Amino acid sequence: MTDAVLLIQHGSVEDPSEIPDFVRTIRRGRPTPQSVIDEVTHRWKAIGGSPLKAITEAQARALGARLGIPVAHGARLWKPWAKDVVRDLVAAGARRVVSLPLAPFSVHVYNAASEEACAAAGATCVPVPAWNEEPALIDAFAEVTGAALGGPSLGAPSLGKSEAHVLFTAHSLPKRVIAMGDPYEGQVHATARLVAAKLGLPRWSVAFQSTGMDGGEWLGPDLPTALDDVRAAGVRDVLVCAIGFLADHTEILFDLDIEARALAEQKGLVLHRAASLNDHPRLIDALEALARRALG
Image (cartoon, rainbow, N blue to C red; front, side, top):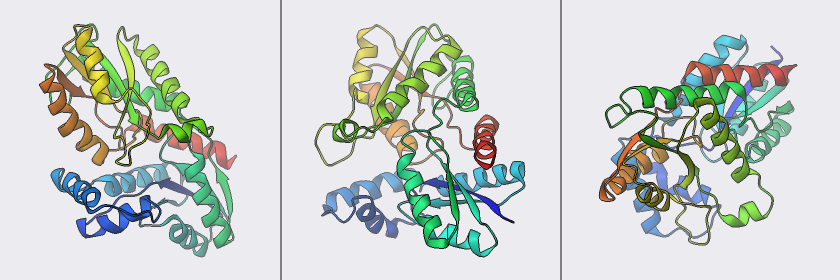
């Protein structure tokens, strides 16, 4: 065995006792108010714990079955640490490791962690570039969005394309990051345009969710502003397609399903959500195409 694939993401805890250390890692050692830790813990418990690790394991199994080579998952900010996963892959015989970020935007932050892990383990790293316009990814988002428009969506009854406003969401970032040249914002809008065009959506827009707790200026419009815009246009039904995320986790199950849904109700709107991709066959198609391209 000489080739392997590392599916790399931010990471997620499996037990609430890990949350303080996880938050401190995300904040890179900056002082962390107890109120922030308490809020993250509340959100984690409200959804019954994050399913992210289990979903990522399912994605890895599905991709491994397609490729016939080892596929493992590791994280930048939590266990299983990318450096430990790559070390184990190398110990098992891997000499070349494809870094496949489980986020199609701003992949450089994930690939940097993979490259560091590979260098430490003595392996060659093959980084996958940004893949926010990968055809199978667009197909995947179009399928789940179209299914929600044509049948019951999560949390609400069926609606039609002509009745709903589709709101594509992604995690917000500080504006200072974009000012430094990060392509994230443009990539998010490009993905939304492609999905909207594929479906022929008459009404859609982009919003940035899950703004951090540090203050400062973040990408917008945020969800409250976007919902106000929908209400002002006289539309009642909002279908959210979270194109910034490939799997269910806190930002989906709490920030959208609980917090955003309650906010929409307060504004007289009904919030629907397209299913997350998780291990959707079209997503696995995209991951397979990316891995095969990288392997050459």
